[in-house]
Length: 65
Image (tube, rainbow, N blue to C red; front, side):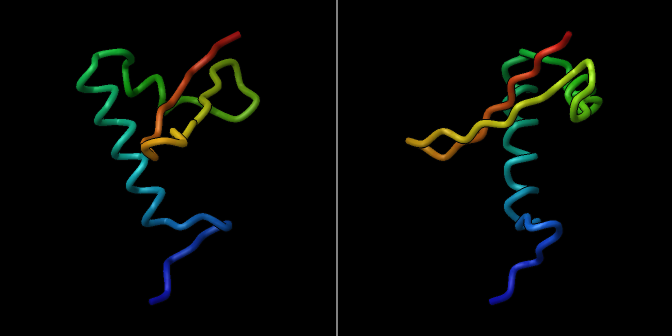
């Protein structure tokens, strides 16, 4: 089975962790998801995506200057 890829990323997997991170932040009320969507690379608001080595879940950390 061929997987749809763009810029080296498996798009189906990308959608999965995008939904997973958004669901986690909405449920826990830790962050306004609109702020996360405004993160840009090398900008004042930077997001970092981590994947747990034990369970495979994704977590997003956001930092600002």
